[in-house]
Image (cartoon, rainbow, N blue to C red; front, side, top):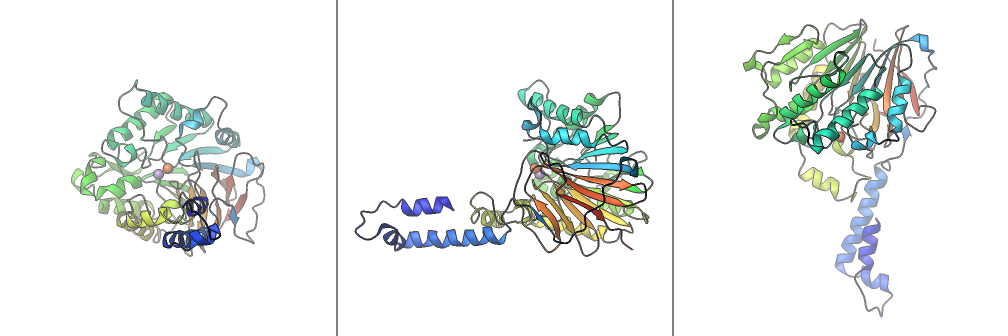
Length: 415
Ligand SMILES: [Fe+2]
Ligand SMILES: [Mn+2]
């Protein structure tokens, strides 16, 4: 708001009239004042950006003892800023390492935008390649105690949606493997520049299904075709994948394969892992407030949405298709996890499915809320999902610098 006030006063008047009045009497100044008031209204209506919100009356989950946890998943997206490699450490990564000392089986899931600004370059020995390697090394070091480390691709990993993305996805895959050889616990998933779905049954009761939403968002755009189009793609369980016949690697073939992975999972917890969210009230989800020029930026985004934003046709189509398939799953508990918006959000849909955005690994952005919002906060952090020995599932929001999770709830299984 400050900018507007300043410019309204900056008209340089040789005031005989009281200056503010005189300024307000010009048409330009009135327009600015209306715009400022409108902006303030939008800013206010959007829940004031970065603030934490927790739905009132949510019962807190009882604290689980270490031996009650059978599987722990730590979900963090958009972690790829170079700031995480600074020598004095990145508090979020220290906290992540602590959370892996649980004695249970653990997996760290990096929800995309693993390396900013444009993924891992194919050529090594450039300053950009060295920076990318430092970033991936910092992640792997923090996740060292984890049994599995899964890197899900995001738009920035695909050369920030520019041509040449496929090479950079393959380079990220190769770099992760090179840095973890001879172990096989860290991987890019889906791999090979393919859309997936790649599924991993971490325990008999828990299936992870990873998909590459950047591939999906660009697959139908003829100008961006070179992004995807990788041949020899596979789908299904990572240890027993099925090939896509080359001529059938279409979005339709993908959605059919996704449906298969989400069927016959009665009694299980299914977690969909993707970079782009299906639900969000962050800047990519059309949230209006709290960003730079709060009343201008959303208008620009609305007029010129990119596939990265909810407003675009490609994004809407993709979300509708995935939701349609999710709606037919027979899983007991569905968690659709994503990053992309740089904040922490949890939604509970009327279907009983949970949607989370955990994209605050290295940046932050504001978030508004919807009637389905259980929690939102524009702050650094990640989400922790614990599957207990007794079958209960708990979700906590972990933020560095706070001892107690700002949210810790038990997720409901559907009847
Ligand atoms: Fe991001
Ligand atoms: Mn992104």
